[in-house]
Length: 340
Image (cartoon, rainbow, N blue to C red; front, side, top):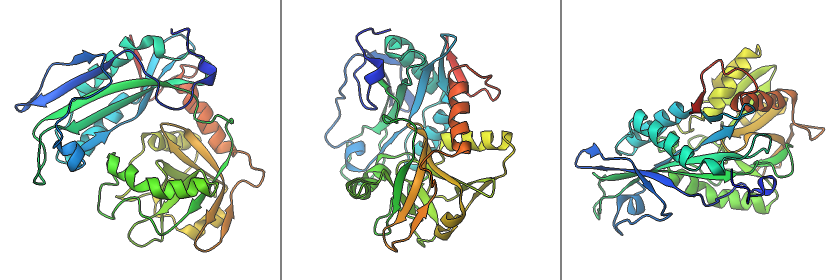
């Protein structure tokens, strides 16, 4: 383990590590897996990734457990989601076995950067696939580069696990109604940068986007999925424009195990009046509890947490997920891949 890193002060951001792992698709097949110490990519200036957005990525984490073992959370689910993104952008899907081998190799090679158990930090794994072929006409590439890079990240909540406020604004869309929302592509995040910047300037942590077609239903919460607790049920938006969050999938399973009914459905804005908890959920933060939701267009304020404290359900979700990831509780669903 790297003794020069102050794990307690590690930010949630990029920190250089020793190695990344790469594989190229050329002449109709994936080539050998290669290890690189370079943090740059040599790419043609007319590559489809740059000009036409043929770029997809994933995000997952490795954890050092209570027993000293290293666990990667839901590796194969991330592989499947990357494959779906590739199909959506006419890119070459990375086979699960290559994805798995490269993840394991990247984590092993950078083992000294995996934070110690109990630090609240983890090793963030970023798989990335880009189109390499030079194109001036709009056409998919026939050559691709797949990279897995890793970086140690500190806990998402520097101020501790507490509620933040989010806002609704209708003059921006994250994605088009039948666009790329269901896939993890860089363009979705580019489209959210301006409204997110405005939200931050106004003191909010994120934008709760509405559906891009009718502006009636809740969509994503910044770069994350949204869920709420209503009448003892776990409710979360369902739409073809929403990325299927692996964290959200995990929470729905935990909710059912806790005896809760789970509903994936359209959620109207006015339903926010009758929810008892809400949170954004994703790889980075696990669950980011919401204290208040302000509709900037109508002036309506939805007070979710009157005491400004995370609700009991969200608190238990975080506790259980962290316990599974760190080997403190049995992984009954086989979510963790142990790095031997």
